[in-house]
Length: 296
Picture 1: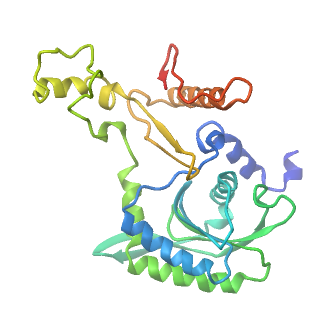
Picture 2: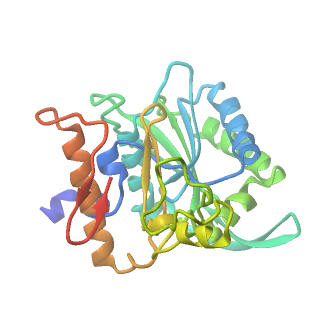
Picture 3: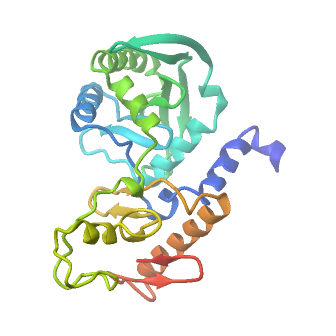
């Protein structure tokens, strides 16, 4: 069937691959790039101005993570459609016609690129399976891109003007440099999580000596004992049912090989399915343990 797909096989292959690494596929949620509140507010404000001018959705992305998402009044975008959009853009090389240059922002020389503008019809089945929207896509650098969605097939020049307004604000407010800094930081790691040195009543570790003062350095070290983060935590995923968003830690030791990461992904997938399966659930809390991991 490859010849019949007309070049879209890369898009399908990328989507299939995401079912083995991207929690968005089974959580039906999207994740955001970690940013300071003021930075995200600045990005959201200019996107809201654009949405008020007739754009259906304005989305600023960094790879598969959302920087800011704004919709027109009463318009909402399902996380599954977000996954399809991000996959479509990132797996299509035609969106990445690049020309390198140096951008100086806040006394930092940042390697950036100029990309050609793209305008393409796209169907988002959760929004409307019987109609096309039109997506304007522009990359600001190798990872960060803007998507403007409209119902009008002749809105290219309007969206081009909107992109220029957005780009000017992002440059002046240092949003681009903050996004690039967040990418260099590499996300959240369990080793960086804060540790509560004062366990709650009844939660004292079995390894802790009951006669140790609660403020003793020995007791604090015991709470950090083990591989990974606090209490030996290796990895976590948290999903907000109100925001349709999730946050997860990056993979780190001892979950370092692709095989280990895929096993953990499958364990999360099975745990989520068992908790939300109509036949046996739902359950508010569930704990599982196998030869590889303990999950809760």
